Length: 476
Ligand code: B12
Ligand code: SF4
Image (tube, rainbow, N blue to C red; front, side, top):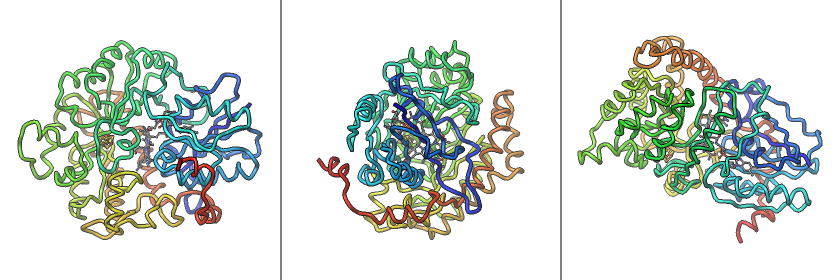
């Protein structure tokens, strides 16, 4: 039996096919292949680089789908199904809105694969694939499953190993798909299993792809103590409340952490409160003080990050209810002044199933028929809702202006001159100099990209409303 795993691309450029230069290993497909019985042949095609060989014989196609790749995933599924090959879709998007995905596949998988993938393989082997499988999100790679990293070889991925320490996050930010998917729970792996995985791969540079590596401070501390002797360098994603815990900060530094993606989201405390950005508000709550208005609320945490020589990838969501064109420009100035290593100026996106999406829907503020990810005219990083204090186009332009300014060569040169962070070690400088040009190129190429490759087919499919066997199963 042969299973073909596919990572879809987002879409196409107006003039040519899009190849993602900053592509990273598709860890979920490595994990799925690792969960597959050894007598089953596993093949991986990454649509971000490979031409998909639809006519190559295979018994099952498994596609991982997130909201940005949904359109393209449906197109790929259609190609295989037209050839009589069964297709199963899994991942964030099928888990959050299974009814939609069910229309485009023979089967969908809701939740994490760990406890249900074996059943899928046996059913497919017997020609009895069910339309719907469900397994709860939970502890990743239970039993110490090793991802099949051999499948990643030769695909030109960035030279950084993706790995999980935990999944999920205890916070409940209203726009965040993670908080819905994991129901505000953080699942931590066994330390021994992670250390074994580190030993079983070649690199000394690891990206822990956790949603919030520091969701549980005590669990993180216990792991970091054991990680120190491995002598790796690592990066991850974490919430800013880490700076309240100096024991944790010591362990981050000692274990080889060089930086984290941190969600600043907004500089305006009214926005932070409205979006329920718990970790960014904790400090003020603990001190029982009224929130300070303005940027300086981040001053102390930023000082701590710099004292520990951590490089920060600052993530902002733009378009909250108290945002204006001016406040967005101030956000850009703030990031520049702080010389962050990278900054992501993301337009705030309404992800279905989130509280934010429901609120906008109730207020009649959603654009693109409420389904921007399927709309044939929607373009990457464009506004998908009507903001309170500007027009959608003004939001799109303001966000793009931030990205443009940030990625200019003069900005990269200016930000580099920070002796506490980027210039504090050769590794940090190498990260800064290698990844800034890659992300700059990607920002320019992705802006305004359409989703999917074949406009006509997808439009036809979107018009279909019949309920499939799978949708009926979900109902039950
Ligand atoms: C690392 C990461 C990235 C990396 C890229 C990783 C890569 N390989 O290329 C970077 C930082 C570049 C990135 C970029 C973006 N990302 Co991202 N990313 C992640 C993150 C944190 C981890 C992904 C991962 O490897 N997880 C580990 C694997 C093992 O977990 P998994 O993918 O969930 O898979 C499990 C299950 O879902 C299920 N499963 C998954 N696929 C399938 C398929 C089948 C057939 C089956 C049976 C089961 C199954 O089983 C797996 C094992 O348990 C996820 C969040 C998350 N927790 O997954 C966000 C996430 C996927 N990203 C997201 C987004 C929005 C983006 C961006 C669009 C952000 C932006 N505005 O630019 C971009 C562009 C994405 C793109 N397609 O190009 C969203 C998607 C939201 C949604 N509703 O779909 C997520 C969920 C984060 C979030 N906060 O909401 N991302
Ligand atoms: S802290 Fe980050 S991962 Fe956690 S719920 Fe908020 S946005 Fe999501």
